[in-house]
Each structure stands twice: as C-alpha cells, then as structure tokens.
Image (tube, rainbow, N blue to C red; front, side, top):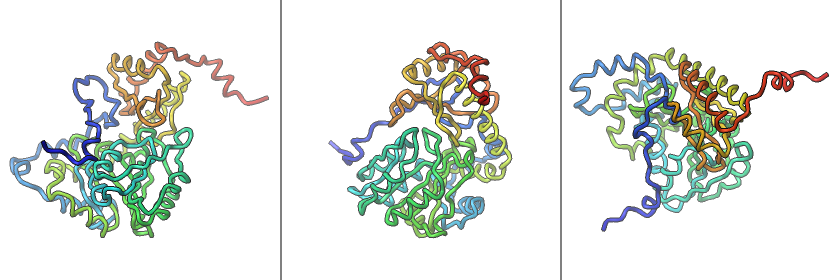
Length: 369
C-alpha cells in the first residue's frame, strides 16, 4: 500500500463549507459586491484560444510589478495567495527546521508548513490578542527558518506596526519572514520593498480574492528580494496561474475606483456593525480588515445557527487558539451591512444579550461634574 509522507498523513483533511450554503455569505471574507464590471466585461470577451491555450504569466507579472512599484524580478504571480504560502514553505523549509507562528492566525500557514516536515512553534498572542513580540523573538534560534505573520491578522483583524515587523526580520536574519497582506486595501500600510532597505529576508504576499472580488479566479502575488524570489520561482510550475485570471488581472488593476469605493463601504459598515454590537454589550477586536471578531460568549453556537436561519452566514472561530466563544463576521457592501444589522437586532436578544437603554448610554458618556 502506498503511503504519503508522515508530515502529510498527519494533516487534517480540509472540510469545505461551500456545500448547500444559501444566504448572505459573511463567513469567508469574500467581496459581497463581486468583481469590477470591467473584469466581467473582459470575461465576456474571452475567445476559444484564450481558454484553450497555455498563457504565460510573465507579461502580467511585469504589469503587476509596475502596479506595485517593483521590478518584475521581485514579483511572482501565484494561484491565489494560498499557493504563494505553500511555495514559500516548500522553498525555505526542510524536515526538522522550525517555523514560528503567532496564534491564532491564518490556517494555511500551518498546513503548508506542516506538509514540509518542519516543526511548527506556536507562540500564543498576548491578552486581548496583542502581538507577543518579545516571546516571538525569544523563540528564534539557529533552527528557525521561517516566520509567517498575517497583517492584518485573520481571524482577529489586529495589526502589527511596520517597525515591529522590521525588528523581527532583523532579529532572524537566517529565517524567511513572510508578511501576508491579504487585507492591505482595508489597512493601507505595507512592507513592500523592505528588502531594498536592509531586510532581504522579508517577503510580502497579496491576494485578489478579497477587496478585488476575484476569489473564484484564484490569483495572488508574492514579492521579495529578486534573488530569493528566483529561488521560489524554481519550484513553481510554468502555468500555475490560469489563463482566465491572467486575462482579467489587467482589468482589475485598471479599475482602482471600484476597489476604493468598495473598501470605503466596508470601512463604514465595519464601524456601524461595531456600534450595533456594542449596543448589545458585545465586544469586538479592533479590526483593520474586512471583518470583525465578536465575543459572543457561551451562546456562540446558537448565535451562528440563528443567524443562518435568517439567511446570514457567519463563522464560529471557537476552535482557534484563544477564540472560544468568538465569531468572525465579514463586512460587505452597504445594503448587506444593513441586512446584517437587522439580523443582529433580532438574534442577539434571542440569545440573552441586553440592549443598553438610551438613558443608560447617556449616563455612560456624560462628562463628570
């Protein structure tokens, strides 16, 4: 009987949540408005040959590099950011190496690292999901070959300053440091180009699945020092990004206004939902991403079930480290935020949440005598 590598056999099987999921999808951080109309127009123009022939990614990589203000040798297009993370781990890890992760964080980090046979060292976050810089750097040793950090983090939405990320890369010069900026458009701060400023071991991953609304096309980008990106390129298959995604990417990059407008809707909606949750005495993590992580408490399962019954899907993250009772709620376009708030107003009292009365709110915010 054939046997897979032990590090692969020990991985949990991924269970897709995509079967029989009618309703407003606020559980996977997708763009609820979909992609730009310009992307749809380009899709409709595709010919038989566009689909039937292999398409090289290099010309589109050059366009992407220009968009990011980089050289094409510093950029690699990938089949979604997930593949970029997988290639990153395959390039820089051997069995027995160590990789550091601050938990809770993006699950793909763990899967991609574990498949290589490397040892994962989980560093728990601080109280209130604060970033544990000293504990993380204390874990760096000669076996440390990779550190991966999502910024903003998923599932919390919390962020780490650029100075802190640079300090980590400086303290681990022999480790590849990956900053996953999947929610960059909502945060606005980046580590792109850090390898040109004395941090050659630092890399950035981006995706077009979130703000750009192209999750179904599967396209991402990995950027870093040209010499190191060339090493990653060597383990990448020649036609890893599908022809449809490559054909549509220029249209997506050209419609900056569409992304900007959607991001503004999400930012406004995020604050509206935060206020609504606070009205019911439900706290949230401070988020710079396209979602909120809400502390629902012991009734989290009932909350998810009742929201589902009203056609609003949210993601229970109770199995993540330190997240018992916490539920992640994606924020979408304005009309979807209104629907979400309506559902929250119905479900929260059903699970025992108490709404602040106007006079109580006034007393709480009244200035002292």
